Image (tube, rainbow, N blue to C red):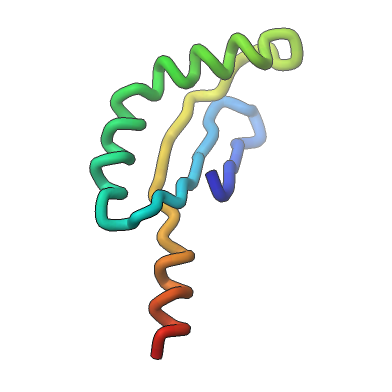
Length: 74
């Protein structure tokens, strides 16, 4: 994960992922999205005494490193 942005009310967390190699990133992201309820459950087990509610997780592809790589290869 490169970045996580949580809303003020802690109801939603936007998680940005860098996946390498980037050729298979779409398939990996799809797999992660299919299992996000299990990931949220695991997160709940870890933070159950710190948070009242576990935020809903949304996953996005962070392609900023690919962009930087393309810019430096010129």
